[in-house]
Every structure is written in structure tokens, then in C-alpha cells.
Image (cartoon, rainbow, N blue to C red; front, top):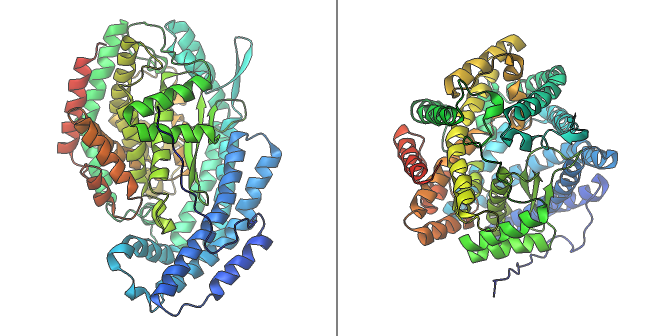
Length: 572
């Protein structure tokens, strides 16, 4: 009999059980009450910081619910208005109060009596946030949040008419796997032309975002936004030189393997050059992998995969399905991409994605499932801040699950097709790491050249594609190439949140490398690392999961060697 998952509930300890926190008028009195609470001992201080975390989680969950609703249907004006009301009316008022909470805690004479090892990571983060906080930046941050929502709306509204049907650009993706090259080219060019229709709008949007971010950094006392972004993203355990070292290691070790893969595909396909519409198709001309035709099969099959990796994890995914904490199918008006977010007060995950029946959809759900397991693994942590982890380790949780699940795809594939899928995953990892370096290096260039022109920006992008790209021929489509960064939502929505994927991929590959000879040990270490939440510094989280926190070419070369060995075992 399959294991069931019955999660513990965590009733409010300070707030009333059914408190309503939908408007500022409902929210503000609770913060006033919190700030009036007496603190006469270290016990009082610890109890108070837990109460503050509980209140923040309850208010935060209201914002998360509105964000989920908006991204699930970006063309619904009521959902958009509700989300923007939170962004405009509540978040700006919360920020100065959050700073008051930080200050009261950090300046308390009783803080020194709390266990130093327990509160080290927490204190480090709060001290950093207090140093960065500027009330003058609140209107800028509010405007940025509104501009970010506009990006989501613009991208979500992009559709084309193809074969007599209106389709989202995500729904065009399956045609890029068609064996008929003319079909692929037609589909790719149609989508590319549609994106280019909004190129000026997106450039205008980004220029406004960039200017605001530069202002935020200068207001906080930084010479450039890069240095501010590193502090704002709490990169305490690595810095700008480490990112540069990662770029260099990728160029030295990974790019050559990328070019080998492209050369192999080109030879298999009998082509003189690979074009942008040749990158997703099976190189031997086999029909596209079709793991499912409806999202119910995606959900049930993925639960089986998770149970084969670890029965407890499978049971947790079954719980998410039963509680309807998934929105998987693509549709018009839905925001692009995929994410897992946390309903903070309930301590439960929610998974969002845009499935259309592709092999990559399996990996997306495995990936977001890994994030969900991370949320569930540390939901019992008393200190709310530690129920979140650094992004570099959050992505270890998700990427590891892609790798551990890749050889257990029986619910979707025959053995031969499962091998194809596994090969596609490993090749995809090799190909994505240089892209991660490209996006990260591009953002370093953008924000260290704040006065650049759009022509200079396009030239910088082209230069980086030449440095980190494989062998792809963009002849006749140079404008689409030069604007291809518009598709990377992180550049618009989450500046400098991208190298985390590269760092995490190195951690995930190490756990997978171990799993090839010690699967049980690898899974146990993975779950142990997840259970720590954010209570320890990054190097210690990696170590708990059985991985080294390392950016060097020696480690990367070892991991690429293992991938090469596994690829040799899998038929093309």
C-alpha cells in the first residue's frame, strides 16, 4: 500500500486563528500591537521575533495568493487590480515597518543572550537589510513591481495564428520538435516575428527598469547596481570575482562540450549548419517524444516517478494533487514560465507551469516538485526566516530531482524513449550552463555600463553569444538573435537571479554523480540538506547534501566527464 502524507498543521500562536488581513486598515493595527509588545528578557525577544514572523507570513500569504491568481490569468482585470492593489497600497507601507522590526530586534540588549550559532545566519541577513533600507527607495521599488507586472502581461498576451488556430508562443513549442524542417522553420519564424513586434515596447520597459534600479543602488550608497544587487541578494558566501571565475570555467570546460554536441547533431541531421529551429528536434529524425496528452496523466505519472525515487516524496506530491496546489496546463492569458511559491502562513507549496505535452514539461514538473519538497521538508522550522533557503540551494532541491527522476520515467515512456529523454536532459544541462553564464555576464555588462545605448547593448549580447554559444547559424535572423534576451524573464523581473541556477546545477550534479553508485545514500543526503532550510550558510547546506560549494574548473571538468560517460552509455 502506498504511503500517505498527512502534514502537521501549525495554528497561530500570536494572531487569532481566522484573522483577516486583506486591507491596510486590517493589517496596520496588528503591526502596531506587535511594536507595543514589551520585551524584558531574551525569552521575550525570541517569542517576539516569532510573533513578527507569524504576522509577516500571514500578510505575505495574502500577497502570494493574489500573485498566483494574477499569473494564472493575466487578462483578468479583477485579478490584475487585486494584485496591483497589494503592490501599491500594502507593500510600500510594510517596508518601513519591517525596518522598524529589524531595528528593534537588532538593537535589543537581549539579543546577545540568544544562542549565537542558532541566530548567526538570521542576524547576518537582518543587519544587511537594515544597512540597505532607504525609505526614499520605496516608491522606486513600487514602480518596479508595477513594471514587472507589465512584462508578465505583455509576454502572456503574445499569440499567433497558426494552422487556423490562435496559439500562445508556448503552444508553438511542440512544432519545433517536428521532423519536417520546413514546419519547424515556419513555426520558429512566426514566433520570432511576433516577439519582435513588441521589441520597442520591451526595450522601453527595460530602460525604465534599469534606470530605477541604478537610482535604488545610488540611494543606498553604491557606485553601481552590480555591487548593490550582490548585497541585496545576500551573497555572503561568494562575490563578483567568483562569478567571473564561473564564467571562465564554463568557457574553458563546458563550451567545448557544447560545440561537440552541436557538431554531433549537425552530422546526424546531415546539415551544413544548425539553425535556431534545429535545436529542439530529435537529431535522428524520430518523432517528438510525447509523454502525455492531458495534464492529469502528467500529474499521476509524475507522482509515480517521485514514489520510485522515494516513497515519502511521492506521498507528498500526492498530497499537493489532492489539495489542488497545482496549476499545470498552458492557456491563453496565463503568464509564461513555471514557478513554485509558498503559501507562507499555511507553510504549503503551490506549483505553476505551462504544460503542452512536451518532454521538457516532465522536467519542469520534476523541477518544481523538488522546490515543493524543500518547502515541506523545513515547514516545521520555528523561526520563519529559516523556512526559506538561499536561492543557490533552493535550485539544488529542484535540479537534483530532475536528475534523480530522469531514469524512472516508465509511466510515460518505453525503455528506448526513456533513454532518449535521459540523453536529452544531460545534453540540455551541458547546453544550459553556457546560457546561464551568458545571461549573468550580460547583466554584469548592463549594470556596469548604465549609460549604454540600445545598439551597444545589442552588441554586448552578440559578443557574449559568440563567447559562450555553440555553433548556431542565425543568418537572416540577426534581429531576432540580438533581441533574444527579451525572452529571459529573469533579466526583467529578477535582476542577477540567474547564476544561482549554475551554482545549483553543480551541486545537483554532484548528488546525481553519487547516486550512480549509491542511490540510497544520495537521496538521504539530499533530504537531509533540504531539512535544514536556511538555518546554515551556503557551504554548509551544500555539505549536508553531500556536495562541495565550488566554482572551479576542476570540479566542473569532473562533472562534465561523468556526463560524457553517461552519454556514451545512452544510444543517440
